[in-house]
Length: 146
Image (cartoon, rainbow, N blue to C red; front, side, top):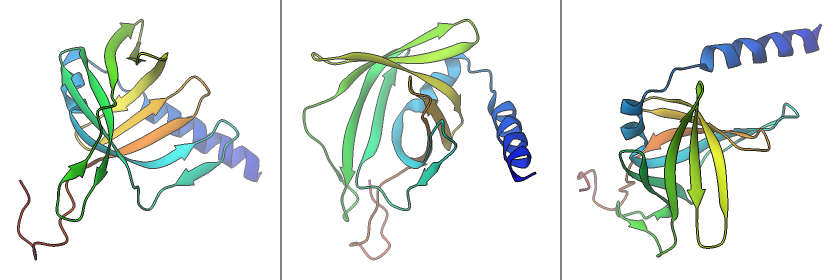
């Protein structure tokens, strides 16, 4: 009975996640994203309470970059010169993020995106649930960061 309820819940969850992503939605990728949870195809989940690294997307139309950044206590981000080129590809009813570096090429499916949340599925059926993130400022006693 428990397994039947789990399967029903997963099916309902997947059905509710189906969102028609339009070219206008691609601009929502811009900014800092923090992984909240990873769901594995075996049914296990790994939740992240806090992350050392965020994903930063900077898109211009269907092309852009993704880079790993590390938030600092003063509201800034550390990053290096490494980044991945990103190209958005619409195919049938799916949207793919095609990444490339000088060393590798791979794709992930953009399952859903809103102003505050994003779901990406890779080729191993791992689903990455992101939340929009911003600067962390613990040093300025409540002052806003730029």
